[in-house]
Image (tube, rainbow, N blue to C red; front, side, top):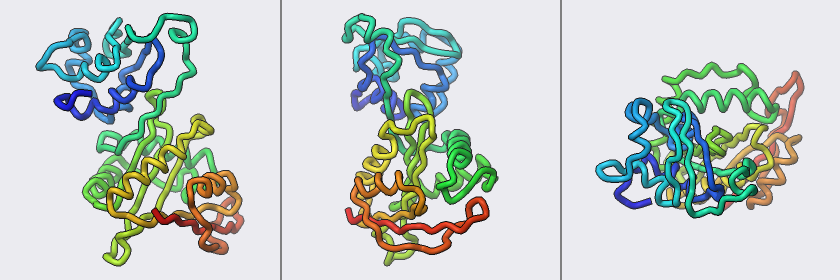
Length: 265
């Protein structure tokens, strides 16, 4: 995407860059999830906003740089894009199986979707610190936390958006004391609907790149003893077992142990 383009559309440009299908339909909700911002009023009120291809408009670079143009506008609902670079055939034009993953830093407008994402994940698994209805989160409180993370040199929240849907997240929480600024605790969650698609690995790898650039040299996490799938993933990513915390949590009225795992980066 050209460097003079609006930065908020960079994730959308990354989406189109990954696409190999001739036609793509994205709802407004999906586009806003990809970019992490609400589209301007003009995008809801006028079809011409989508079909502009001349300055001073810059948003169109997000799709035109990858060879896509706007085929049709269902105003306020969805945009239909088509490509001149990909051949029109049955495999491409009707391929609904292509998964396009965007990982980006969370922004303030992600507060409500992030709450919904967490609530879904907490409901689907017993392997998180919090269970269903354990947390009463508000948009205001999440935005306050996001402001703290965005200004912190050693904390961040990354979101995984697959096919325009909020699929998972990873949070890196840096140590507050000067002697602990080199390490960060990691919390990760992925919705069951997006499991086995490599999202957790991609989140961790992207987060590790961020950590290295932020001066962090040690990553730490905890994982419930019974969560063997997560343990296999962490070991594959280079984490090592560092200890056990007995009776760490009470889940379904039963004590469960947690493993401490860490990685030098």
